[in-house]
Length: 157
Length: 434
Image (cartoon, rainbow over all chains, first blue to last red; front, side):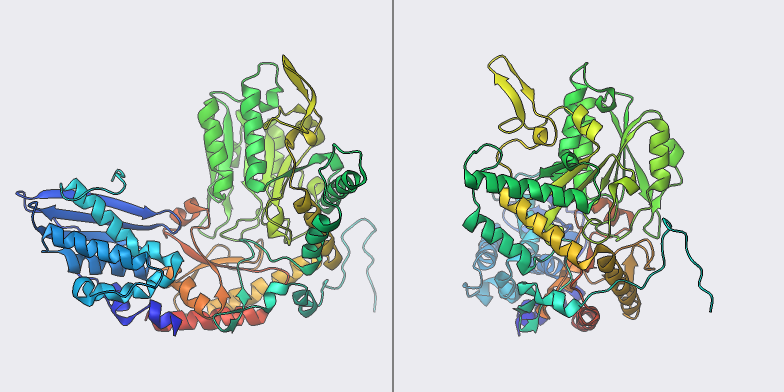
C-alpha cells in the first residue's frame, strides 16, 4: 500500500505527461525572473522562469531533469500558479510547503492545492520531501527576481 | 595420470576457497530484519557494511570492562586499553602485510587519511628545510583520475590551490576502465604524487596498478592508493602493491564507523610534517616551540577512537577467520551471477566492466529512463536496499552522461537469492513506470 500512496496516479501522470514544460520567452512588457536549483545529493535540477506584471503571474515555465517526484512537482506548480494573482499564488506556495513539512500529519485542501494534494504521501518519505520542494523553492527565488515576493535563499542562478 | 608440480614459491593451484554463507549470515543480527514487510535484502555494502556480533561484542566489552584513555596512564585499565588499541594496530598491520606496525596510522576514515597526506604536502611546502618529496609549488603536478571518489579529488584540488601546483587526471574508457594511454605524458618528471582509486566505488573496476607504479618509480613521484573498496573485499598486501601510501576505512570492512587507516612507508611518514597538533603527537612542548613524536603517534593528535580501533581489530580477526581469498572468490561468483541476471532485464544499462574480470562486486546501472531515486524507492518498498545518486563520484556520472545511477554492491554475506530479489524488484519498477 505504501508505494501506491507515494506514487499516486496523479504524480505518475504529471511525470509521464508534464504540463507546460519548457522555458518560454516572456512578453517584453513583463518583469521576468529565473532561478536554477539543484539537489546536490541526487543531482536533480530544475529551472523556473516567472513572467509577471506585478499583479498576475502570466507564465510560470520550467525545465529540468530528475526523479518522478521533482519533475511531477514542477508540472503541478506550473498548472497551479500560471495565470494566478501573485498574492493568491503565494498562498498556494505556502500551503504546498506546509503540506510537505507536515510529515504526513497535514490534510491538504484540494480547493487550494488542486493536483498538489497527491503529494500528501511524499510528506511521509523524508528522503523525498526535498525532491517535491525543489521546483517550489526555485519558484520563490524566480518570483523574487521578477520583483514579487521575498527570496528565501538569494542563490545565484 | 601425471601431476605437474609447481615449483615451491610459485602460486599453487588449489581448490577454490569457500565458507558457509548461511553461518556467516547468522553472525550479523541486522540481516534478520524485515523492511516494509519483506526480508531485508542489503545490497549497499560499498556504502557501509554490516557488523557481525563478534565485532559488536568487542565494542561493548571494551567500554564495559577496559575503558580508559590510552598512552598516558600507569593504571591497570589504562594499560589494558593501550594494549587493546596497539594490539588492534598490529592486527591491521598484519592484515595488509605492513612491514612495520608503526606504518599504520589510525584516522577517522579514508577521507581524513587522504587529507593528512595532502596537508603534509601543504605544510612541507611552507618549510624550505622540509623533505623535497613533499614540497610542492607552481610547475609541480598532482595526478588523480576521473574515477575517484570525491574524497580523492577535493583534497588535491585544495592542495593545488594552496601551493600553485597543477592537478591532472587519467580519463575513463567507455568500458569503465582507467585510460592509461596517456600514462607517460601524464606521469612525468614534474609529478610529485599520483593518487588513485584501487577499486572504483561506482564502476566496480579494480585498477591494475603495476604499469602506473613502474612509471611513478621511474619519475621519482609518490603513489597513494585509495583502497577503501578493495581492502574489505580481497587480500591486500602493501609490499606486493608497491604503493607508498594506502588508505581504507573500518566501517566498510565489518568494523565500526569513526575509524580508518593511513598506511605509509616508514621513511615517508618520518619525513612528513605533522598535520593536527595536540596531545599524543608531541615529544616536548615549550612555550617557545615543540618537537614531535615519531609516526604513527605524530599523526594521531588527541584521544583517538579507541573502542572503534579495538573493534576494527575484531573485524580484521573475523575476516581473517573466514579468509580474504574466500571472500574474494565468493564475491567473484556473485558478480558473475549478477552481471548475467541483470543482463536479462530489458532496458538495463551497466556502467563499468560487464565481465567479472578486473572488477569487484559493485554494479552501477540505469533502468531505461527511470530516475534512480524512483528505482531505489520501489526497491525499498520490497525490502531491497540499494544506493542511488552520484555515489560521491560525480565526474564518473558526467563521463557517462547521467545525473545519477542505481548501485547494487555485495559482500561476504550476500547471496544469489538476494540478487534474484533485486532482479524481481526491477521488474516491479518497470511496471510502475512503464
